[in-house]
Image (cartoon, rainbow, N blue to C red; front, side, top):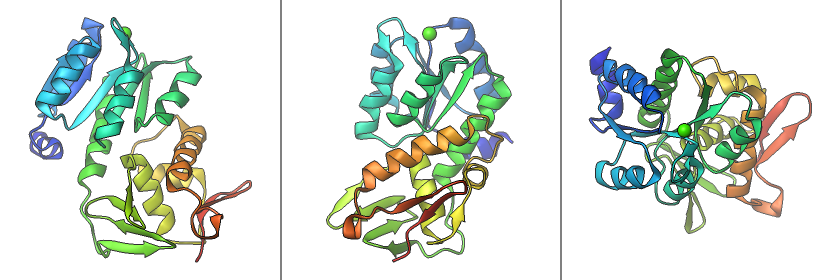
Length: 237
Ligand code: CA
């Protein structure tokens, strides 16, 4: 297991941004068991320094930090990086979950969390980033978009659209089969390979972000249609 996990992180560290020492120690232990390196930051300032110095493979970010909010870090990093970001939130803070996803986090775990679950989430995120292209043409066109599965890039006209890994996966699933309706559950299962309690609302937030980033599309009719009571589908050309 160790070797495989190490490969997933590509030798780069997992950055843990958390000011609760006990949580950091528990997390660090579990992540190291997987063969991953861990970089620890207890403040935004340390996190910024390590982010620049270490080029982490993935970041786990607590929201409440002594010198500010973890959300600020996610916003900053999203402007320059598509690294997978998982944030830690209190169980009852529904608004935090939505906001975190809206500003570009890929996933969240609610405190108190099981370390096993968190490690599984990290593994799923890293695996998605490294997912080999199997039997698929590495690039395809859909409507006015060019999707590059290897570089995980979406281009529209001359401009590239910056998507998070989660957004990219949703696009990939929908756009490969235009016109097919995917239920939220189907999307969740094919994108997160661990059972996901965040559920339907999480998918809706990611879809909203994705729509915003993709813009109007040809004829300004959008790319993703909501099929009431059923789910989502990619528009047929
Ligand atoms: Ca905290």
